[in-house]
Length: 331
Ligand SMILES: [Zn+2]
Image (cartoon, rainbow, N blue to C red; front, side, top):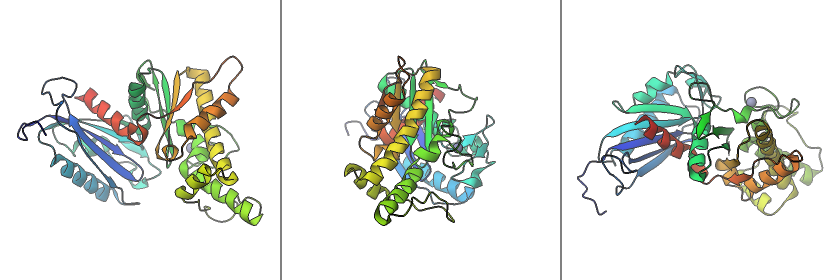
């Protein structure tokens, strides 16, 4: 390191709270040439897994420990914190729904986050909205739709360089856009959401059913029996997709088509210039974004081509990058 270790540098903290892990990163708050400089100071980052089905006190203790451990590696005050969050949070800052962690329902999220770094400005927003903002900045594209495909389907819209809907008016719930009234059942309880077809777990379950049908000749079980059918492990789906196994290609193409329906419908209404597909599940399947693009071309209306679809530039880091952008705006 060329800089003396003793020079304190003001920093901003980004927190990306995911369904299964939390990612943290501190960057110099003056990295863009602002007061305090900091361009030569390397960011620090860490992540830790979320214990499944833990309680709110346990989750908050894990978060507090994670932030404390990262702060110990940063020499200087934290001036602002940006938090990316998958739960639905009302304008007052209270969690209204989080299917992945029902115990958080009713939590005063804003207050809990402010308690993590006393004295710092804290802002939070939907992880899909923030990922869209970060991808728009990375692509230098002010009109963009982002789909993040993982445990669920998140997403966001940026129009004229700003998040849509505007802050305080909810988030872009692209995962719950209806694409069929008779489609698969979503985690929200309704039928036909994009996420019910395109999410990682939904794809893995269909892949298991298609693979079982090809090996046993039995009709495709479509969840008609008791309980939730198990999915194939992701590594097996990926291997099947790369080897062009029929069951894997069919399952993945159906997910790509569901994402393409969302892109085409959003193009009709909002005319984004670019659609970006990211999220852990999509990132893990080479060519997934290209398959969504291919399906979108098929679904386009004559004379009105849908927005081109590309893979996310920031990969799995788009929500965290968006959280840092939010922190800088709050700073
Ligand atoms: Zn839904």
